[in-house]
Image 1 (cartoon, each protein chain N blue to C red):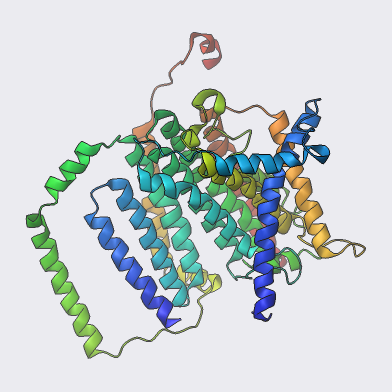
Image 2: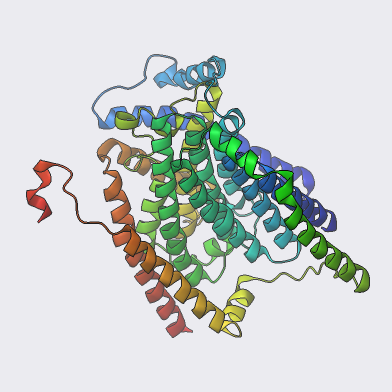
Length: 319
Length: 175
């Protein structure tokens, strides 16, 4: 920690403030963009461009009755939504937003991100189990299987980048992309990481754990009020996290031509990926559960392994 | 650094005791996760950040999730908690407790007789772990690989079933 303590606290506070606002704002952005792509208006009545809908939504979530079903396992039921927020927010610790704007530059940054994303699986499993409801349990089981399998490819796809840059630290990874962004040599790794990222955040088309048309709302059927809000915000934070990771690992992080400051480049790139997430939701149907697993284990896993081996061979040859 | 080590180890021990004494399986497994996280912090303070991350990813993040996955499917009720209670009578504690006491005695002897090993803050990074695994411990890695392969083949054999046609509409495409 070279910076002074107040500066350091400012970064933590700033990151937290921006993230929570981005997560809330994304709800509005998503509804507007979905509407645009589906040829309708979306929220446009309250305030300028319907922006006050965010305020109304969060007020509603805060003041709704926070009901714990009598048949639920109380402790675990309360614990589950907190885990998702904690694990996602902790992952942001290692993300370099711009030179110097990072909470902690761990030398195991990539692994820390993977560890935290694997802890996020608990919120789904425990939430679904504690609800004591068969739809929730089904959703939780699907979620658990999905997250465990896609974590494997996610981790292995990341290793290609680690091999090329020779470091687990995200700052080093960004710095080593000065010549060439990694999405060109690691195009397969990038595609697999992005698909796995969509599955990790269980967004459409991979929102099988919640699948509202078959499982009501899956693992969070029984949740209401701010507990539901935490799952909701956790999901949007998860999207932001995966976008940040994709940008950092494959698209040169804050790097870009000099006419804009680094932080602006970072935000622009992240925004582009957030839009892709929303576009995916607007355009793709949900696959069946067994199709999802088959696709993962039979196509993505061999591809990832081949990608990893080829990358390792090329790195070895160039040494 | 030393204080964090002691706090983390204390949490690990308490959480592990809670794992054994808890009658509700899921709660016990949650304590197990806490115990793994505490052990990860212990690794970190001992200067092995790579091991700490792997501990969280593999043990807390994957293995316990799989165990919970299985237990969720068992549909445990209050009766099972009662049954667990009858199994864990004080009588059953005597044997394990005696054996653990012997171990505790040995540990205490070692701590008193030898110099306390000090916490060295020389981080062991991923490179060193890799060199150790593919150097002196290569045989161990290969044996682990064979064991895992055997597990995968066994699981495949147990899980294989004849192809079922889920719906008459799909019958033609299944050939």
